Image (cartoon, rainbow, N blue to C red):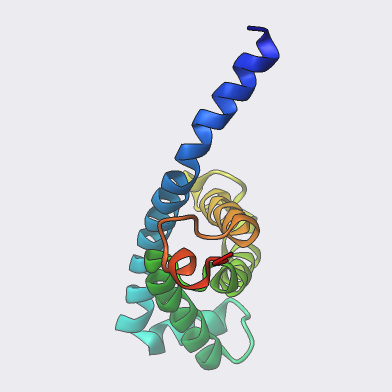
Length: 146
């Protein structure tokens, strides 16, 4: 057995972890969006006011949009439903968060930098390109039946 054969067999075996990895990442990311979403909903007027101070236009509308997108993301990511679709507005939320809040603080998460929203965005790009995986409602509902 040559190195190529060993590697191909290793690759075949590790494919079994793909859907479990996507499920784990979805659940962790959903949990990561949960607290910020609940914080926004607990005092949406304060969030709108803060959005205004950091230069976000239409701060009340955007506070509701951000909070709604995040809580919808929590639900859809948890169940793996419309995962590719919800990834797009969540990526937009992360871009806005990076540009308006985190970028001036540099990269490090400990200094309120853009590290964590960047990781979230990378996870979302994986979901956008690979979908939710086998352990999801997307797979159950939309799986090709051929």
